[in-house]
Amino acid sequence: MSRYSTSILPKDKPQIITTRLIDAPRELVWKVLTTPEHLKHFWGPDGFTNSFKSYDLRVGGEARFTMHGPDGTDYPNRFVFLNIDAPHLLRYDHDNGGEGHFDHKFIGEVELTDEGGKTRIELRIIEKSMASRDAIPEFALEGGLQNLDRLAAYVAPMAEPKNLFEISRSFPVSQVRLFDACTRIEDMKQWFAPPGMTTIKAEQDFRAGGTYHYGMATPDGHEMWGLVTYKEITPHSRLVYLQSFSDKDGGVTAHPMAPTWPKQMVTVFEFIPESTNQTKLKINWIYTGADDAEGNTFRAAHDGMTGGWNGTLDSLQKFLAKN
Image (cartoon, rainbow, N blue to C red):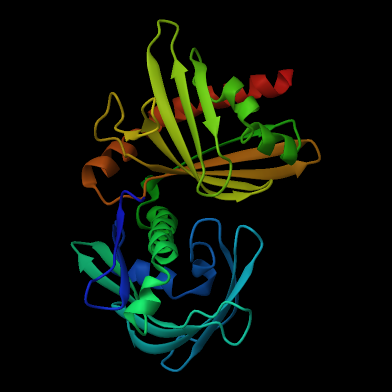
């Protein structure tokens, strides 16, 4: 479950409500929520992508698009806009536009409220009855949480460039080989640790929603645990996951030496082919929360992150040279 987003099922209304505080101005959040060139990158649950056919933002206008599930299933969607009060409220009628087999009809609302320069977003799915609402809660609740997590990750660097840390390096291997080295557990056990530390445990469930739980130890026996939660897997070009400190049982914990370090960091690996046997790995680390202490800690730590990531990439480079 997301640390920053919350979802509820009201007892007296056939609604599913998901909320989150986003550290970005309301006008920016409105813009990315109403522009298909932005929407296609984050709309929907983890692992989904989008192809837009049309987007006519006016009362009575339509938006038609297809959501592509991580298993290859396509879900046609149509919005008919009912109310547009920029940058506060968007209300629409949803169906599948007469395409496909899955036709979930409901009223959708997106409400944005300014909170001191940050934005409180509330997504509401309004069903026709409590029975129809209660037939879909698990998917809709978790899907709403993931959708707002993806929105926050997308908008964070736009709102504050220092919420994005970026580092890259080229390796003399193919795109497929580099992707495998960064995703196969037997490979990761050999390099995915800072210099001087060894991997003492590694367990992986490699799928959107799955995890990689690992433990590392220093030569004097000090242990450190981490948890990766996979959000998007696009072989062999893109990998998105949440990075957290952990304990030996797989729980999310605070940084052992920096209590105001973010509990979750969005990590994006892009595998960019430069030639047949040369691939650039671009890594983005993104802070998506709205806590001032966490944000300031992250933004002040870029020099240290550069050193840490370079050490990790050195280990990857040595591993690839031997394998």
